Amino acid sequence: MIEWRDISLQLGETRLFAGWSARVSKGERVRIRGRSGAGKSTLFQMALGFVEPDAGTVRVAGRPLTDDTVGEIRRQIAWVPQTVELGDGTVRQAFHDVVAFRANQALDASEAQMRALLERLALPSKTFEQPVSQLSGGERQRVAFAIAVLLRREIYLLDEPVAALDPHATAAVRRVLDDLGPETTVAVILHGDDWDDYREIALT
Image (cartoon, rainbow, N blue to C red; front, side, top):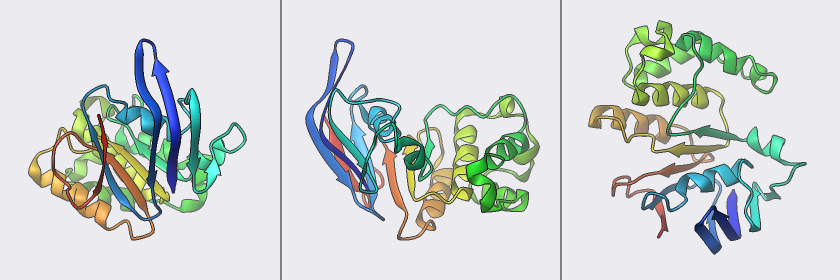
């Protein structure tokens, strides 16, 4: 589903990749681990076309990532970064801003679905009405994750999705991920040794 083939990339004085390759198959669950600065988040940014490798190719769903394909490829992917931007309004407004995009209008995602999903992610029901500015980093990530789930993408890229969460909230995120279905591809960036049921891609 996602393939980085013979990737080389240097950012400033740092060489992150030199002829590096990896593949995430359709329906696979993968955890990406490595030291800080090893390029974990950059892998996701390359899969989305935000960062272009100096050499090598990135393919998503069998298609090379190019200027002509990047828009369609991004519509297949839900990306939840470690630092989430949800605007200056309420969670309700952030939800409606996303579902109003032309590419999302056919999904028929409802406020009731969003509220129910927030509760499944161990967030109180009042979260839907709260200003985004009042949410912690971990709460913002779960809100963004809930919106992403309702978008029903084929691929989910989650950057440190549970780093700021307690065990109860972490378990809630895992349950929602497990319910995405066997055809959904999930890659998560982690620092710890948890989630050992996910295949590991290690960066040195």
